[in-house]
Length: 122
Image (cartoon, rainbow, N blue to C red; front, side, top):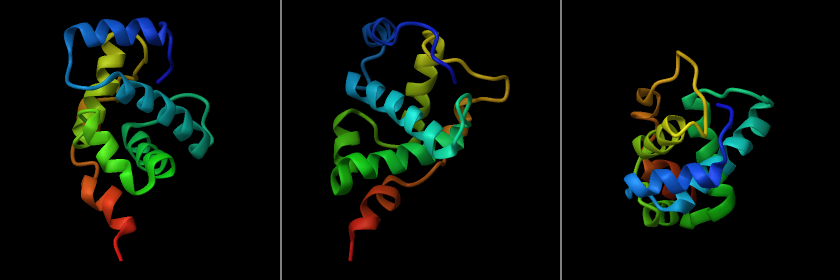
């Protein structure tokens, strides 16, 4: 997934037609993509599954026990939402995809409570 159109302009266009997610959710996914590339030691494409794991790690790193709450405030309630964000960016030509990438890669990724709340429960 390589960026090739101005991110800000792309997100503005997305938000005009799809108001499900806050702008911050798109910025977070962009940052999480870079985090994932570093974590996987890959400069180019990462898979949907790799990105989901990078998103999980990055959210916990950035927001700790508030990760799920912050994501929910931005309209992100499950992994499918990350898929919608990524494919909105793909459709707007902010990110690219390979022929093997599918929005289905983001279905059933992980349960938000397990991923974001459980690490902080005693």
